[in-house]
Length: 115
Length: 113
Image: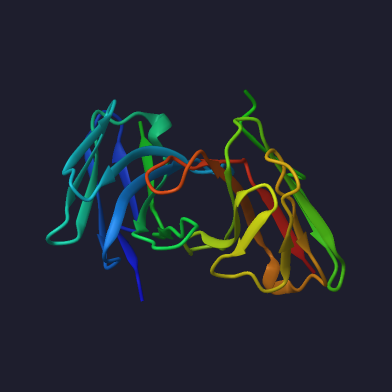
């Protein structure tokens, strides 16, 4: 069964510090890997999308990396801000031969940034 | 652009009642999706549509129905609500499939008692 596992489950850091979130997946073959940010009570918002041939993608203070050989991805957040407090979800899209985009979602890492 | 909108935001149903969750997008996207998010679980795909008049089942379709009569609207129908359908429901849309960003609505929190 295709799975996406994220670690840690939750994380608390001080404002201004950096952090790295991990994602391991077994979806294979896969088309692309995505990271989403989900604020409490809101829908997920896309941060990055990487195809299997890319190994890094940045969006402001967010940098995602991908190692397709070890099936691992990480999301690095630089100089954290209070507004970074959210759940960060890793999502893997398999290569499909038919219609539809049946993404496999991780359960997310809950990040809290404190003063 | 309003993006993806969903109504209602919250709803409480009694067991056996029915309701329709509304979803609309103004980005002229062909692809639309319904997900449910249970506490501590990843989002699960309920149904999706690749264009007006075309819908297909996702991972957890039982107890739900959808229709897609226009590009903009993709309502989700719950028939005979059950406590297992207590969840947060998200509608999303994308322009294409493989590498496109999915844009999510704000969600509908449904409780079945």
